[in-house]
Image (cartoon, rainbow, N blue to C red; front, side, top):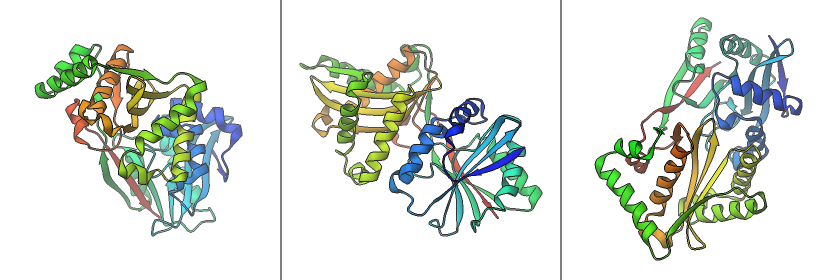
Length: 335
């Protein structure tokens, strides 16, 4: 296994990176080459002011078998190596490796990182799913090396396993919530100007739709603060990237021609990954978020998707729609 250090994104490995990801022990949209490169260009929308890229790849012959997309930063209190994408805007991250190559890659990686010219003290892997194979592999490796590997639960990450039809889905939701979903969707459809749903598909209108989505996000005071200049550019790039890759699901609910709500999601690996949202407060009484989410679930079921993943955050509405829990964790290995 030959390891190589890259201080810029390796353009010649673009296709091989994504091909490896498609076979990796963990496959999530935030690990695609395009997303990772765009995230690095803005350092996560300005999250990291001090950061040096340290991507480590592993080959066996001509075959790429592992990628550790890392960066070095002193901003965390202790000089650390983190995963590209950490922390705020990339819900799921991990090491990329072929099944059967993860443990030897991690062992070789830790040895290799001991020789890099940065005085790191901790390897911190944020936002791993709690069933990530990297967790037991790291803990076993740390034990053999006499090192400490701490695992800390960060957040809930609920999702809805989807059945094959809408009525079966509703039957699995709490009775009171089932009534609310039906009532709100029906009421929105019966208004003088009824609600309508559309998903952005036209490349010519994409930029305008992106700006409309950011405008709806900014209606919320906390999200308006979040949307700094660099963060807006990061969000634009993420939506353009997803559209180019064929996995953007940007859904709007509108009354007439006025947009009332929007969800930004990825339609990826046969599931909908709900990433962010925005709402027009003028339509508060029509519950546009509930109505749009109900239509999104209906659409996902009709189109054979296996799950709707809310990703990080334990907001109550997710559970009212029938979500079940899993968690994201942080693994910290001290040098």
